[in-house]
Amino acid sequence: MLHDDNRIKDHFAMARIPRYTKDEVDDPKDKSAMLQAMRTNAGYSHLDSIDFITEGYIVWEQCPTKQLSRGKDLLSRPTLEKWLHAFFFKICVPFTRPAVTMSPVYSPLNLTAFLRLITHLANVGYPVHWLSGILADLCSGTIKTTARPPRAIVTTPEHLNAVSPQLAMSTAPWAAELSTLLSIWGPLLPFGLTAPRGHLLAPADIAEYSVSFPNFTDTSQLRLPHFILAFWKSKSPEEGATEPPPPGNLLHSILREDDISDRYELAELELTDLSLSLGLSQMKRDRIRLYTTLSYDCETKSVSFWSRVDAMQELQQEKEEEQWEAFIWRVDRWTRVTEGVRVGEGSVRMRRRWGE
Image 1 (tube, helix red, strand yellow):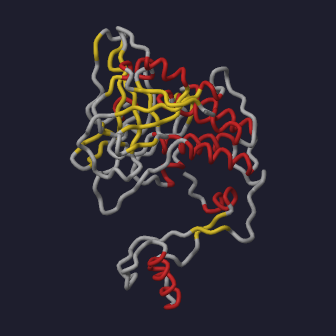
Image 2 (cartoon, rainbow, N blue to C red):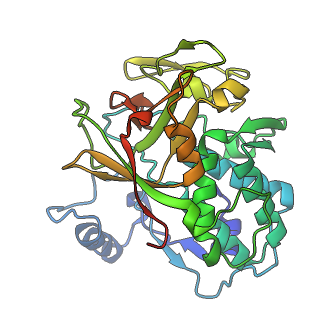
Image 3 (cartoon, rainbow, N blue to C red):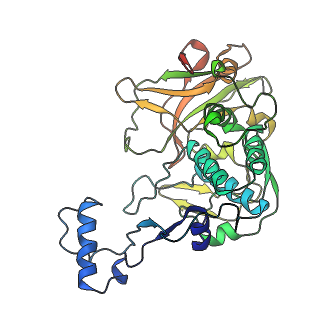
């Protein structure tokens, strides 16, 4: 989400090594060295030639004479907020991708990557009250931002640089997980956090949970990190009736269609470009909880994850007028993988408290 070479050098002291694409390699010695690198580093042990390569082989290295900015050449506060908000949306709402393609684009990060970036930016020299404020806003469930979720599989500089109006965007589906991770990572951050009451929790108020799922048929590409854990309130007192979770695209429940630019077709699904506004109604905010950071056991078909205890107790309380279900969702196509598991029937179990 940061595409300017100078900014990358300022913030990470890294630069792309030149002459690492097929068209850039002229010297036979360089071509031989690149071929060897492809054999050893990229796993192409059988490769005899690089002539078939059409894409860049990107290698980054630390700039030998470039130091981190350390308080110099930093982004303005609005630009920093837009960058971090866009990075947050890139992780949480990746653009829909085809399940099978010769040119795959993965979105493997979870919300721990966001905290790693925040930690790095504090060491670079950004004011800690800026960073603390961004984290507090994201945990609150609503932010005002000019950033937008990705509009295409590959985000372009034109999209990032586009000037968009400031909108109130919902982060409520991820607030429970982010506040959990922030509480766990808090002692590791190089600055103190100032957050409203309830955003940070004591270790005793955080626990690891597990939920087991029945057999499911969608077992394609299980090795790829494109799964999340989703909780859906299938019965809500506001409506007085049971509403099943969307059979397909969860984005239709997360995103709002206020600012649709165009339509596109992806594989056999025709989807609406909903990448412009996360303006959830209060009802929808209360209906969805999403967790990006999880562990899946293939043998037991169970998911383990860390969460704040009060958030899970809210879901586990069996009420006549409310009912929560747990699902595994895949975010390459934003479709449901499993049938729902009733949370209130004891299917979600606490394994241990943080620190035990």
